[in-house]
Each structure stands twice: as structure tokens, then as C-alpha cells.
Image (cartoon, rainbow, N blue to C red; front, side):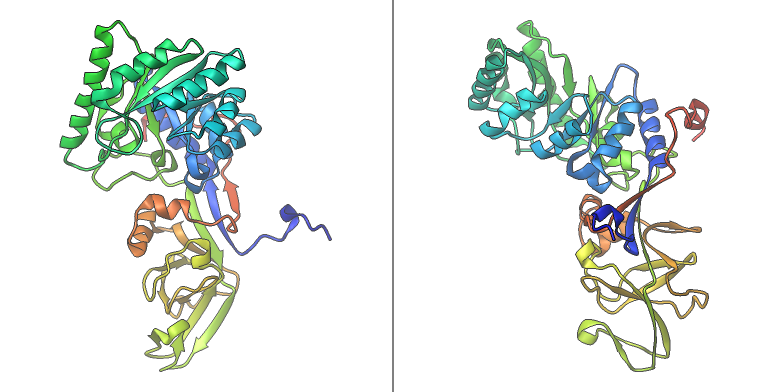
Length: 394
């Protein structure tokens, strides 16, 4: 018997990644952008749980200029996987990370003088002139230099011969809501910085502000590049932002029925006995739980089995949930159940799970655990399988 992980029998609970839909989403995003605007695919946190390397390889085929990441480990995973496109490390870098950035052609955001000087010194020791991006804090108040203090820092970067100021960026605090007042204030603050730089004869090659919400609803802020994350995975960042026909979720979460119990009237189900059967019920046990990232709820939510909704009863355990299949008599052991995604004409959306979790869709997607092995389906042989006609007719 081989003991290697990849030889294990597949667990009857998994995440399913539809690569054909991912390709379609990427093509629709690219087709919606003016040709001159670059597309940066944000693939931090394993591409929001979808598998960063797989997503990055496909995004390169579909015209992505580069990738946005949060950690050095994430960037090195892509480099080790053969991704040679620009990798932009968002946030701040410790000085100990800067040598890795220079050695492996990782583009750092630099937002304060000490890191600028340290990166310049390291780049010079490698005899390199490295690109950097400066983040301007226009109201998010997280990373970056304040908009009214940015020009001197730009000049400090330009004074370093081993650095090349490739980009200037900001990040919207609220771009996907109906009220765009604050987003437009952030744009105005950003534009003010750019105007002052232009007056000094300073040209920045890449100016970028837009996340998924900004890409959809703030076309006047697209500038030279947009940073798209959750949208490429088929999830719109809010219910009120603009929709693009044809974009659909890439990830499903599935399990199989591992046990079936017949529970008599008046008996309880699950920890703390939070559910009592009103009549004889047929109960399916699914081997997936909050240890896999499913919301820890009681008597809420459910699963799709044979195209019907089976309500969740009792409490979600670490490794198991129980659903009522009394009204699905055809359900049998090891039948497929969908916890997130489509089955037949029914769908359980990531938005529904976010509501159960009292959180947001980003949290749901990134919290499916790695013990749910990813299975890829609908892999396109090449980037021409989805035609321009299909895109325009979506």
C-alpha cells in the first residue's frame, strides 16, 4: 500500500472547481475592459480558496498582466510553480523579506521611508533596478501614505537609482454599495496627488484604484489597471453592484451520504438535543462539518440531494451534519449532496452561507479547509474553447 497523500482514497467531502467557468469569467472580465486597461488578478489566500496556482495559470492564458498577493509564501508558491508574470505583494514587507523580493523579481509595495531605503540598498547589491508600487491612503486608513503627504515620498523613491516607481495605487473602503459618495472622494484625493506629480513632470506608468466593486461600478476610476479578486470566481461583491451576464460561481462544495438513520417520533438529533422529531423521520448524515468550514449553526440551512432541498436539523458538528431526507425517498447511501452550488434547478449560494455565518462571502470562500481536497472539473484544453461569440452572447 502506498502511503503518499495523493494515493489516499478520496474523502466523501470535497470542493469542486469548475475550470471551464473560471475561464469564461476571466474572458468576460477581460472583454468588459478597454483594451488599454491592464488586468491584475488577485490570488491571495489560495485565490480565495480556489487554488492559486491553477487560477494563475489560467489567468495568464486569458491576458492577466500579473497577480496580487499578500504574503511572501504565496508569491514563492507561484514562482516555484512556473509563473513568471509580475507578482505584486500588497501590504507591508518586513526588511527580512526584501532580499527575497529582489532575488525572485517580486514587486513590493513601499509605503514608508525606511523600507524604501532598505529595498534600494538590497536592489543595488544585486545590481538590479526593481519596480515598486506606492500605496496612497485616501481614506481606507490601513496601509499607505496619506494623500496629502504622498508627493515627498514619491520624490524619495525617484531619488533611489535602484528603484523604479512603476505604480501608484489606492484602495476603496466602499466601492460596491449604491452610495458612491466616499468612493468618489477617494478618487478625487488620488487624482489630486497625480495632478501634483504631473505638475512636477512626474509620470507614473500604472495608476490603479479599482477592486472588483470598482471595476464593476466605477469605470471612471479604471485608470491603467484594475485589481479583480472575488469576481473572477463568479461572486459579485455585493447584491447591488453591476452584474455581467454569464459570470457564475466556480466553486461548489459537495459531500456524500455516509449514514441514514430512521428516528422515531419525539427523539432528539445531535449535540445538546436541539432538534426533536415531530414524527418518524429519515435522516442522512453527511461527513462534513464546521471543522471543514461549514457554518456552525442549528436547524438552519441544508443540502441539495436529488435536486431537492434537505433541511439541516440539529447542530453542525466538527465532522458531520444531519439533514432530513424524509421527503426524498430515493436518497441512498453515498448519494451526492451539494452544500454550496447547484444541483438540478436548485442552488445554495455562497451568499446564503454567509448569512448563516453572519459574515461575508469572502469569509465563506476562504474558510473551506484544505482537508476538503479540491477536485477540478470541466478543464478547457486551450483558451480558444470559449469563443468571442460565446462571450458577446452571454
